[in-house]
Image 1 (cartoon, rainbow, N blue to C red):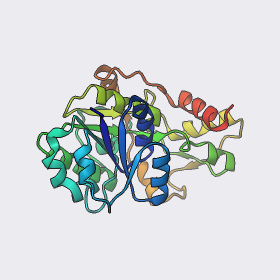
Image 2 (image 1 turned 30 degrees about the vertical axis):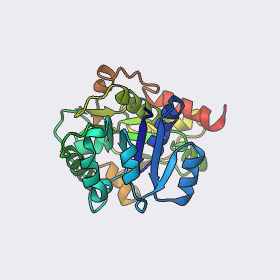
Image 3 (image 1 turned 180 degrees about the vertical axis):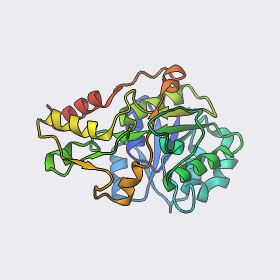
Length: 286
């Protein structure tokens, strides 16, 4: 039987997973709000659905696996807001359901380590919404739910090089601040490994082995480009959007032992240095 992945909010991580699954003969249906994005999905071999809007019941009937990337909004999880009854009625047919959450659910730990057993104490509106969405998905009986808490995502087209090159990059300095991050290729391989080895109820942190201050990442990008070190600015006085500033409300290092021990994952990019080196080659072809 053809395995069919229905991907809600098909974006960066789901696109990268699709490049693993499509050559294996999977059928992938991906939702988007955009006609332009729908055309791009079609060109990539993914069956697009404009949603909200399309009747998703035929796609749900066909799906053997679900991936949920859509972020919660003011009304909660957008998929459950419209389709909870339909998903609940079909819960037993799905071999695997993946929900992409965030390590923001752990809140601020003043630079200390967290793992999947750490209590959830989100410090931001986004983190609170994710905790609520995780809980809402977990209430559906007989659903083969797997939760993936993603650290800061980077990858092709989403790296620091453009800002370093155009001179807009800054090294925001907040003493003790540390972030975990992950390359999108490692997210995709974690998801593929989980699909191959389902464990309903499992929660996985997805991040690399090297939590680091954000200014170190910007500095290394400049070093790779052979450009001057971007200027340092104190966090307390730096001009930042409320969204950007909110990311600095939390400082923690995230453990990733579970993806290695349970799923057998060997990270492609175990630290930001190797990730940025590969990204520069991809972007420049050098």
